[in-house]
View 1 (cartoon, rainbow, N blue to C red):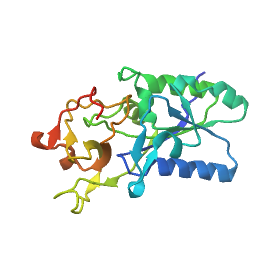
View 2 (cartoon, rainbow, N blue to C red):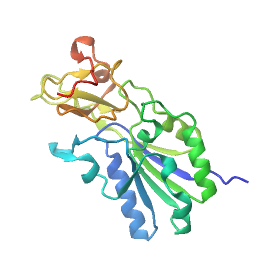
View 3 (cartoon, rainbow, N blue to C red):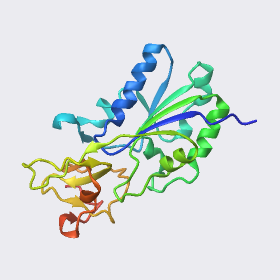
Length: 233
């Protein structure tokens, strides 16, 4: 008989909402309690730089996920070998990216398949952190299925960072539940209809993420620019 699915906790929300902070806080808690675990991040996340707190530019792969092993898919995690070593808890960073193949297509039914397999192998707990919505506002399939199958979803929020009246003026400050990609040179956001949810080629040098409220996510055409994935400058 198939075991129940692992106990899953997902920290989700926009950029800058503290998802990774919560994930690493839970790692510290388990370390203090002496509970072994392994942590993984997706190889498809090849972004070179991100904007960290206080504006510093850091390496996303090296600085923020030092304890995470890179794997290309959830199926590459050696769960049977981990359980034999007494490890029954997994951590997943940027977990929403695991829900796409390298052609940016969502993988149907992945959550139920993987969690069923991990349950049979003996995995008991999973903690994950990642975006809940793409640039278009559509929910990622992994989160939808996590809710459907009873995962605990912790929604993290941030303050809207859209400059209300120019970059030097105070930001909007309302509750933000979405992420937006914009060009730091002119502060214009990319067209939500043409911007792909996942960017395997990484951010371009002048691209930045920010958390935005619903009003500033749905900007009028004159405040957005088309996205050309071939452009590299």
